[in-house]
Length: 515
Image 1: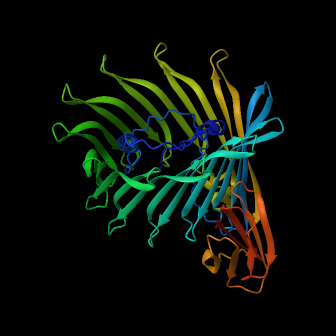
Image 2: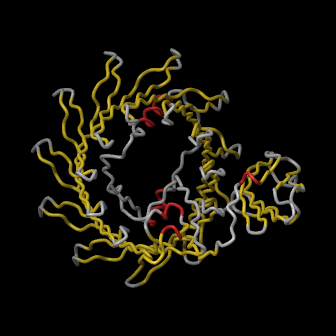
Image 3: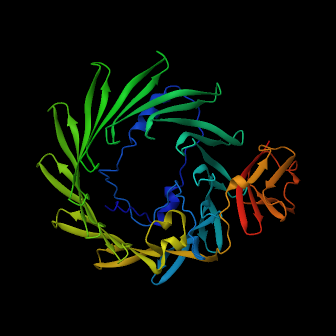
């Protein structure tokens, strides 16, 4: 079964990623609210009942997908995406560009967005991503709110991920940039415990108290599994610091069919007055014989009627290849006891199951029919398979993605009108001779460092080239020398730096902390 394709136009990415969690003063009264916000969107086994009606086209996700470089000699590396806006009839003007950098394995290590005004590109955000030797994301640093006066970013956030020997995440630490002290300050932390089957059995969340410089318990989640390994129940608790105990808050119960597909889940909230669990909302899913989700209905609990009441309904259709071709969204009209249509989109595909056109409609109750709203045409190079593409999250299709064109329906002329478009630019890179050498063959020490840093290699004969850059990408030091000799870093100011090392055709990247 193909998952639903959710695509968001690049022209909207600027606003989508303009926000970030800001540094905030500590308010003990916020602890429970933070917990409530976190469990409102539980980590359910399957995304269902999605009422998303946003524009659809290639989506940027903060969680960058790891794609190991293919074995093909000639690969197509996505370097940038340029978005143009139609300013007059037949006249396009660029207004946005995203630029990408990768390590030698094809991991997306830098992601930067710029607004364009004429010939001027102004930074909008800049993300730096680090990986361990297994390709797992270990750190994600995001910078935003660019200050033209200081030519630097005023804000940012950082997430550090820690793994066990089974490569399961055991801890997330989120930090926010504190403009007053000009450094990252902890914000929250999640720790995970796994059962013998490798499934998470418990998550503990903590909030950072800057007044005491300590982590304080925030919430807890316990996960229960059935005999087939399906997550059958989740229990959430919030920490009552006054009574020094965990208090129940929410509960989710999941039901599956014989194929392991989620058929129902019910949400409950805890009533402290009666010490009982109370129905909150429910989803019921229906599947076709191929296992495709064909209908999802959500219900709210009506305490006055003591019954479940219809809320939303999604109906889905598929082609013979299992590609999702149509989704219709409806909302329950309790006055007339009927389902009212309100949104629909259809998706077309090429022979390789790449989405080539997505058309969105809205329901006009006066006309009693669907009315065109907007559409996105997407183009691919069918001669280049995805295995020969290095493009981060944009490498999720069967072939190389070339671009898109977005149009809106002009009700005055009853025609599609151009609105904006995006073009994907690639560099063809010859990768013959790149040895897949792991980072374990490089030793960088000490780290953190204050005066000297040593770079040790198994191959001690060939010269190495070392480039150290700050997180803005500005080179601060470049050295060519024999391996295992120290370099002086005492001139560098305290902070985190990117390190890139080249030895012959072997490339490495790492982080270096100067204290």
